[in-house]
Every structure is written in C-alpha cells, then in structure tokens.
Length: 390
Image 1 (cartoon, rainbow, N blue to C red):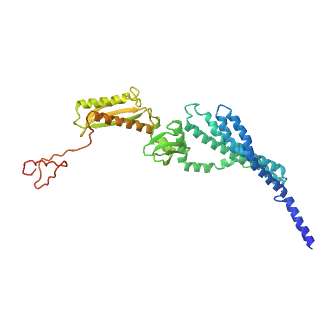
Image 2 (spheres, rainbow, N blue to C red):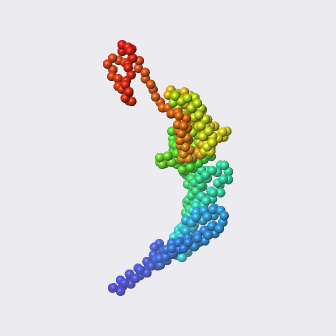
Image 3 (cartoon, rainbow, N blue to C red):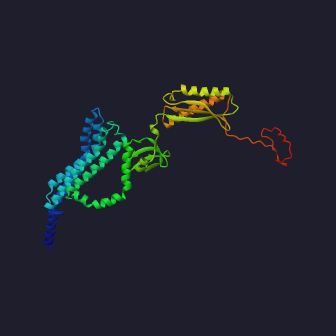
C-alpha cells in the first residue's frame, strides 16, 4: 500500500514537472527565469561596454549633438538585454499554441516599446537643430515643440502596441466621437489655454528667464511656458501657474526686453538756495551723468537735468537719464552711486535738501492760552496786542 502511494506521489511530481503552469514544464520556467536574471545582470555590462564605447566615439566629434543623443538613448538601450531575453525565452519554451501566441505578442510589444521609447528620448536633443534656424524658433517655441512631439510619439507608440494585441484604434476613436464632442464642450478653457500658449510663443511676448508684469495677474520671472499654463516665479520666490489665456489676452510688460533702464528723480532743494547754487548743482549733476560710462549718452537716450518747478516747500530739479545695464541688481548699484554723487554736489554747493513742511502764523492768542517756550530755550515771543478776539 505504501509503495503504491509513493508511486502515485512520484507520478504527480513528474506530471507537474512536465506540464508545470499552462502546459509549460517547470524546467522551462526555471530556465526562463534564469535567462531573465542573466539579462538583468548583463544590463550593467552592456551599459558599461557598449554605451561607454559610443560615448567615446561621440566625444571625438566637434558637435554636442551626438553626445546628447547617446545620453538620451541610454535608458532604452539598457532595456535591450531584457527584450533579447524575452525573445530567447519565447524560442526556448514549448507551451501550448495559445500561450505561444501570447508570448510572441509580448515580444512584439517589448520591441515596439523600446523603439518608441528611443524616439521619445531623442526628440529633446534633436530639437537643438531648430535653435537659431529662424526667428520663429526661439527657446520657448522649441520647448513647446518638444512637448508636443513627445506627446505624439507616446500616442503613436500606444496605438502601435494596441494594434499588436488586436485592438483597432480607428474604430475606438470613431466610437468615442460623441464622447469627444461632450468632452470638447467641457474643455473649452483647456483648448483656449492651448491656443493662448501658441500665440504667446508665436508672438514672442516673452521667453524663459524674462521678467514680466501682467497687471492684476502676476509679476516675476518666467520659468516654463507649458501647453496649458506658464510657470512664473514671483520675487518672493513663490511659483505662480498662470493660464496661458490670461497672458495672451492681457497686456504684458516685458522688462527683460528693455534696451536701457531709466532713472527718474526729483531733487528737492530748500528755498534759501541761491540762483548761483542752483546753476552749480544742476551743471555738476549733468556733468557727472554725461561723463559716467554707466549712463547712456544722447542721442541714444535722453538725459536731462533741469530746474523743473517751484513746489510748496522746495525748488525741484528733475534728473532724467538711462543706464546701460537693465539688470536690476546692477541698476541699483548705478543708482546708488548717482545718489552719493548728488548728495556730495549739494553739500559742496552749500545748499540743503528740502522736505515737506508747513508754517502756521497765529494772529491773535486766546486769553488764558499757555505759551510754551521754544525748543532752543529762548524766551517766548510776546503775544500780539489785541483783545483776544478774532
């Protein structure tokens, strides 16, 4: 009885060993796992040897395009040993015909995935060929083209894999027609922002790195012009994601496209400043601006130093000029230097700066009013004669 039971158990073991899972012998499954494990280990050797050789060849050329291509192809290239291992496993195992068909489809899918993955990766380095080709291909337009191109490649790759598995993409799209209309009606803002992004890039309103101001919307530095939104970094370092439609419909001030940067001041001097002092101060400020290379000289840009008007508490001198630099930090430094110079010029002329003030003259003092002494300790002025009535 025990022998008979052992023979039955051994027969069961042999049957499982021969047929395994879905008609595939356990030995073949073990061998397939071994092949896959070897492929995973070979990835590192392949990456070090083949890709290292390709990098060495690319480094010998004068352009950076081939170096960028090799780096972009590195991730899909490391996947090649896995694809080869899957093909070897398919040829090695002998499953039932239905399982064999599924394995072949997996092989085709892996090949299609690797090819489209490689194309997806090289879109970025190939975009460098567009830079500088024409005025239309500015960095923002190139970046937008790369994103659209990658979306198309991913869509085509997904469609190709679906076709391998017998899923027809065309009928699916036709069947989704009514659903697509409904989605389009609900996604009007999305398409509006997409079109707005195209207009922003095509009109070259701004590009990455520009300092822009959209009144009532945002002010800061452009970091990324996306398909739907533009990322602007405010000066408090907080990112703002602005829909492209708002940047396309609103007036945009692009400070980074200034030719020069303006300084417009009103220097207020005391009324006791004499005419000679006014002339001396005005001429000295004008000479400083005209002799300093940091400022743009006429006729490229206007430069005015003029006595402008008599204000309530001061005589005003207008200083209007432009600096060569448009960089904010450098502009602040030039403006600071000019402020030091004007302060020294006014002091050297023996004049002083005015500040808003108001004088009140009291004609009569009410009876019993307390008169405090002046801050300098001198005797208070005698109140004017009168009966204390106004």
